[in-house]
Length: 216
Ligand code: SF4
Image (cartoon, rainbow, N blue to C red; front, side, top):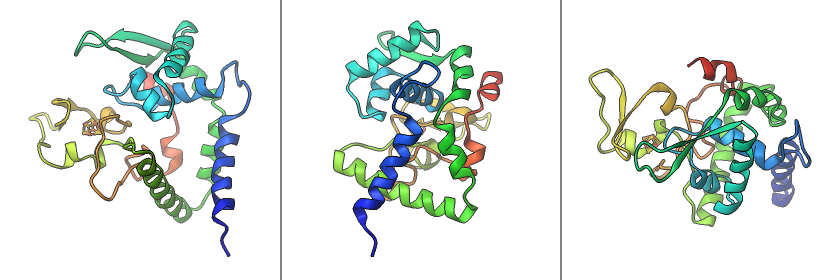
């Protein structure tokens, strides 16, 4: 008979192993989580408040984490072009370089060793769990454009140059935007993408590639 609590503990244990207890390369688990988030988030979502939402923490705690990464040269703060009041956070070259030492990569490697079918089943299962946890917390899950109503629903349109349009922000989207997680994402039932991964690419194809990102 399947023990629900034991299964949940395995999920939590995997998370703990990946996120490490102490410091790795001089960074705490919260600092690693922030670097990972700002690497994966689209340009509308690289803010302290969006990171606080995603990481299920307070804005004050998120702000301290971000501040420490800015002072160490891993994140760069830029005044928002849109409203002039908020700031956007981007990884610097040093931030992209340090991601290669991310302890989370151990978990990525473990997933990539699973057979393709098991990875698909795992994703379906974890999607369902993420959706249920978000529902219980009264939060919307983050996701990517491919499953978002603002792209696929009313208002979605292609620009003359072939790019898609985000109806929520009223801005065109390029390929890089569309593959990143978004704080404004909204999915009608069922939630397609609570893990923040929008494509069906194999997990090894979604590994952080700091060099490729920097070149783009
Ligand atoms: S289409 Fe949705 S997920 Fe994509 S940028 Fe717009 S709100 Fe975000």
